[in-house]
Image (cartoon, rainbow, N blue to C red):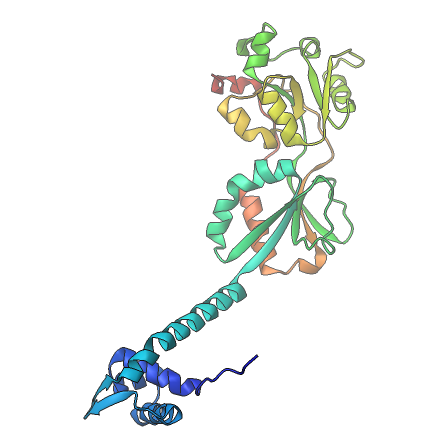
Length: 314
């Protein structure tokens, strides 16, 4: 590969500024050097080429034919360099926060609210890592996570955001197909047991709920088993069955009337939603900012969706 023939960049810069601005003094002001320094660099460039680049008449300068040929490509080259420098500076200023959450939490709780975090931290790019398995902070490059559990993960700071109780929800369409209306709510455990009951992970969740409702051992219609809370909510909205779900994840569906709480009886769990991050990052200002935002956006008092909210439904 042939080596590039490039004159001194300082001389090219002085020439480009003088030609673009139409004067040596203006170029000197832009480059923060003296008039004599710019003139010296231009003369050095002309000696390098062996040709005049400017016609001089006192303080006035005008490009020669050779100078005009040089100006366009040189200006374009300096513009390209300036753009590259700007991109690198933007990358250096860009901060990345990688957040891990289960798909249900990611798309039901975080995604609809991330716009407000972007407004709070405009220089931060959030990378959302969603998985039904617990992410590893070290090997997966995770900064912070929203996890469901008891908050006892070793080596972490775990702060409870919301409780993890669950209630039975169904769509108004399912109730209508079973001969019920929203005015019939709350339903008895026996009435709920006659409906198709879908499960998250196992049927034990429903057995626990019936025990809590005072109907242990009650036989019920078993539906499909799902392994993600967001999927099971979609099934309920589609009118395919009753689901036991956490009100925090069903907030939009309850508010719009797509789902209704069939009973105020709920399973009280000793688990909940936690904001989790490594102890090594407890003083990280970006983690602290995200934590403050999470608690402002997501933290809510204990309680459940009430069937008395049925007026929201169409």
